[in-house]
Amino acid sequence: MSQRDARVSRLEMRMTVNGTAYTLDLDPRSSLLDVLRERLALTGTKKGCDHGQCGACTVHVNGRRVVSCLTLAIQADGTEVTTIEGLSRDGAPLHPMQQAFIDHDALQCGYCTPGQIMAAVACVHERHASSKDEIREYMSGNICRCGAYVGIVAAIEDAASKMASG
Amino acid sequence: MQPFVYTRAATPDEAVRAMASSGPDTRFLAGGTTLFDLMKLGVEAPRTIVDVNSLAALSRLDTSGSNELVFGAMARMSDVAADPKLVREYPVLSESLWRAASQQVRNMASVGGNLLQRTRCEYFRSGEPFACNKREPGSGCAARDGINRGHALLGGSGACIAVYPGDWAIALVALDAVIDILGPRGERSISVEALHVEPRDTPHIESTLGRDELIVRIRVPASPIARASTYHKIRDRESYAFALASAAVAVTLERDIVSDARIAIGGVATRPWRARDAERGLVGQPLTLDTALRAGHAALAGASTTPANQFRVELAARTVADALMIAKARG
Image 1 (tube, one colour):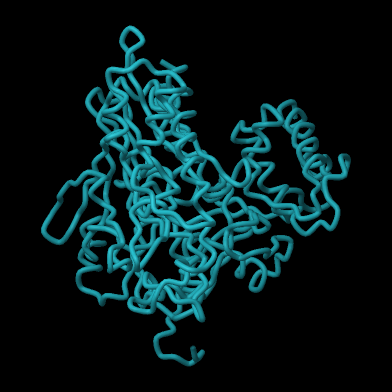
Image 2: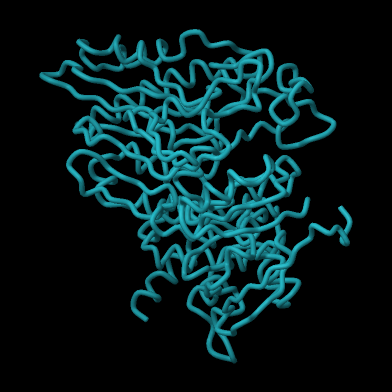
């Protein structure tokens, strides 16, 4: 389809990402994932399958985890978005979940890790991290092709206790 | 992806008017987890989108009533799944939601939109060069002689054997749920069971919903039978997969004899499938693994198989039987 197609309309949207307010002029077809990566240069959020099956693009919209690949950017109009870059800012210590992923070797190649960590933080906030089985169930939307699952579950258990006490 | 004009409705009436006054290539946008996915694949190519996400009136859920539970169509799957009354008194409903998709997708997807989730048939999703009567009427069905391990055992036709993929609708059908539908001439109500249609020779027609109609709420009659209920889902992996076979069941026993039973099966049929013969056969019997298995086989009566999917007849029958035993233990 031609870029000059007269039917290509534009939309204006506002959203806050990691505490910074943005006003954006959008092609309505844009996914939130592509806007974060291509327009805002926040490339921590990863594109895996682009169909909601792998979880690599997980971010928080108004505090809830979503897959940004299946979120039309315009659906995030007026919301607050948090990406992996927003978990720990300006030289502050790492978020307990980030530190736990390092401590427990919860990754190999690292491509799924930003999505894993964003899903894991939400998993703890939702109180879905009370046991290994519950963590596995509520983290099932995040695929790790390296198979670092044992480390991921251990990291979430560890971080959950630190997040509760911190 | 084909360009589209995006509009946002402020009220349900405005949404329906916008749909009625625009062309046939117009779609409502709820959670978007099916629509946007299929737009990326070129299966859906709307020219206009009417976003119904800001219709706050449709997001409410009320499970406090003594006659019925009411779910606004725009309530999100994760919120409904976690409702304490559902978890406690209607486990079949809660489980059908949290055993579907992932928490990310459940945070996005609406309980109204979920009813209209489209099939996961790979030939439907893949596009050319594969024939698909659902995607392109009259083109044929590549699944009939293709890879059909996951295709329908019940309700299929020569034109289509694509499975209805949802879980929530199976549980709703088991509990005689109703949907309220808003159209240009006002509201009407139908049972969830009357929403989906078998493919016959028009597999592109999947529901009885008019194109200018919007599901506004789902109502479930309050019933003590739901306390002893479950949604049992068997998959290739333990979580985040579509059902190879599933069963939504509820039972009431009086002095160890079944006085009421509800059985609906998913993952094996072209539409949500209520197994009334299996229910009737169980009433008046003691509930044992033997009678449960008989009910399971009765639920699969009339199954039509291929060499690749015939194992799912026995799998589904045993899924029903196991579900009945789980429900019994909750009574």
